Every structure is written in C-alpha cells, then in structure tokens.
Image (tube, rainbow, N blue to C red; front, side):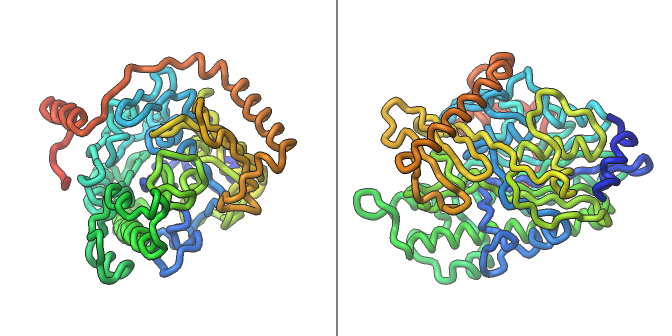
Length: 462
C-alpha cells in the first residue's frame, strides 16, 4: 500500500505519519527490564521520569500493553517480527538459544527493502547478531552486555545520535535499546543519592547474588526494608535512563528529527520485586513482567484523538503501526495489527494476548483477554499447574480463581487450545535454526571475530 493510498485513513483520524515531500522517520526506544509502574506517567512517585512523561504528554499512553514473554529474546523477536514466539522460534533456556526463524521476515528487512535506512544500538547478549536480531539493519551497533558489564545509557544515546547525524535527510528506522535497569543495579552516584540516600549492605552494585542473600527464613521474601532498598536502586537506574533520554530528545531536536518522527517507547519486559515471592525475570508470566509501558508520540502537530488508551494491546502491534503510518505492506507473517485506529478512537476492542516461554524452569504459557488471564505451567510436576486471574479487579494477580471458577477456567482452557490450533500451521511452517551458545566467552569471541573482519565498530564505551 503506498503512502498516498493510506493517507485518507490517517487524515480521517488525524494521524498523518508520512508525506511525499519529507523523510519518513521512526524511532523505537526499547528499555530493557522497565516496569510500567516505575514511570511517573504510570503512577510512580517522586517524579522519576520527567522526560518520558513529557513524551507521553505529547502522544498516547497505553495502559494495558502486553509483551509476548517475560524475558528478552522472545519478546524482542516478537517486536521485530510482529508474531508469537512459537512462530518466530527465538526461544531457549539459560545460554542455549535458537535464533529468529529464517522463514519469518523482520520489520527492519521490510523497511530496508522499502528504501529506509535501518539502524540499531543494542546492549544485551540476548540481542546478539548470532540470534538474528540484526537482520535487515544497515548498522547494528551491538555490545554484548552481561549483568556486570554494560554500555551505559549516555554512551548508547551518543552512539545513536552520531548514527542519525549522517542521515538527516533520509527516511529511517532507529532501534535504541538501553540496558541499564537490568541487574546489576548500579545507578550513577547522583541518582543513588536521590533515591537511596545512605547506602547500606549490600553496597552498590546490587547483583542477583546480593538479592538472594537478602532472602528471609526458608527462602522467603526479604524484609520490607530490604525490598525497599533494592527497589530504590532499580528506580534510580530508571531515573538515570530518563535523563539520558532527555539528552537524546534534545539531540533529535538539534538534528531537526524530533518533531516529524514517530517516537515509540516500550520495554521487553518488567522486573519482579518479590511481587509473587521471586525477583528478577524469566521465571514467570505475571503482569509485573509482561505488562509493559507503551508510549507512541506521532509527529508533532498531528491531532491526537486519545491521550490514554485503556483497552488491551500488544507490543507486537508496534511495527504494524509503523507500516500503516508509512504506507508499507505488512507481511502476512505479522500477527499484530496497526494501533492507529486505536489511537484515533475508532477501535476500542481489547486484543487477545498470547504470552509464552520462560528462561528458567518449566515452560509456561498465558492467555490474556479483556478481563482474565489464564496461565498454564507445562512442567510435568508443576506444583501449581494452572492459574486464573481477574486482572481488572485483581491487578496484582493475588487471587488464583482456578478452583473457585471452574466454569471460567474451562472456558479459558478452551480459548487457549483454540488459539494454539489457529496458529498450528504457522508454527509448523517456520523452521528452527541451530542452538547458539550466548555465554560470555562465546559471545565475546564471536564479536571479536566480527571486529577483526571489519563488520563492527570497535569504538565506544563498554
């Protein structure tokens, strides 16, 4: 579909995303491990994120945006391919993972074929080129971040702005991935002082091992004081990312790219702070992990029909939204659909969310509709094989209704089975690549080989 043919729809809802005479630009900001409730615009206290909040004030904030998984690889692959983890096949356990299926196109490939420049700044081992996350990007500046070794947000922003400065007159897609809120929690001193105050044991940086050391008797949650300390360190990291994004937005303005770009901010997943007894992520599919922030700021001057969307949407709807805005044909493999009608108020339907995969332990799958979430543990010896929550009346998912509502449980089981049947052919059509080892030694060896061949810029802050 051409930009001109799509113009009538965009005019009808006041969201014009392209013009025959100007470059078409999209900036997708993906903040790793970002809980929605750590942002001021989603209710966080202490004004931690004024720059992100300002972006939300200029665009549309989605209250119920659901990721496809509770850990990085399958959720980011779903963002880039617009489909479910079972179909794109980017899954695995621990450090042994499979890449995006070669049978599934990525959004970057679609935009590249349409003449867009495609650029990415990525900062996690789970986003490694060996897993296919780089497919379609002209430049994929990747650092294999592990918990205690990362390129900080400020350096990532500087790298992204340097990329964009050479392409001011070009239509482009930029993916900016920031890793800082991920463990280890190690905020810069200014932010630590503001959110934590006097440090205590364990001192910063706080690692996963440190969090384990705080557990109570019999492995129970830490004391409320210890939980507050760890959460404050995480919130300080989020505030630092917000400052870096303020610098990024200022840089876009200086380049003349801020006002006329589609700017989207979201996350791959959230973080657990003992909400259900555990911490970190990759273990469960509760909403503290899979309900993520989603902010879409169309080009400045467009008529916003809605400021906040309450209906349920999915992160895999992001790239179909950009296809729609720019008049590009959406590949049939993309299961997501454009959010432009939602933003315009003409589509108020809740979209079904299918959530799957855990990085650790038995696999889990979840099915979330306009009111309920059904979770199935696929482990043969699961202590709690099924869970059912009314997330509208019980947003913390504290009351499992699986026994109290057997009729509803059966209905959701049937809905999940019907969904699995509906995607069965697509799952079978996509092949799986070989298993890749993303342990630190393997990834660093691989990237050093790329640098020696001239495929990567070896400069930049580590």
